[in-house]
Image (tube, rainbow, N blue to C red; front, top):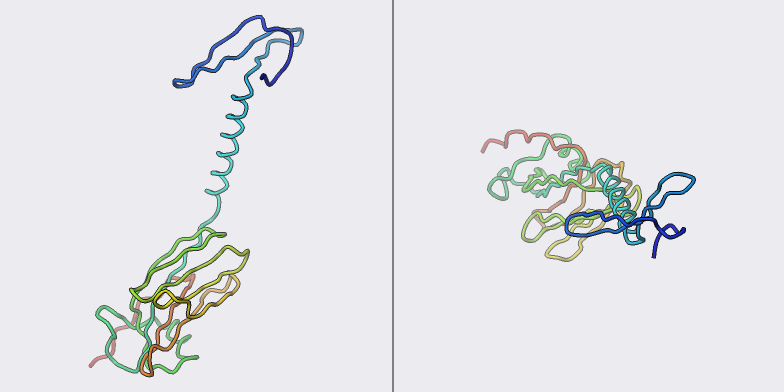
Length: 193
């Protein structure tokens, strides 16, 4: 089958692309010279153009960076685990205004780069994981999981800078997962013992 119909061709031509041969017909008429190419070639060209356009649009999607923190709250003056540091002043103020703990310790931090319209899962420890879902337009759904089970979910506008979710671990400690757009500040020096 040929894309363009017409009178019988005056000549056949061959074009090679790698190991594939593509035959096309050439004819000349009162409007000048033009080439007729097989339907397969046109379909391949159209598929390639569509694929290139899709890649260009995907590349144009601006990635969104989130900082994910695993926080432990307690009344102790020493870190709950080796390497844990007190949270920065902005997060400390947000946590202290709502929760009762004396100290909030950052146990783990990860930077996550996401494309709007997708979702991802971030493993923070053996027991703790968070799912960030940007599949709904202008919404960010954050789900905290403990040992694989959902503990709590929060859905907020994507413009909201910070989501804080978590649960009590026992009567002496609690854990929180913070998903935020702004980079966390450096932690202040831990209290002297």
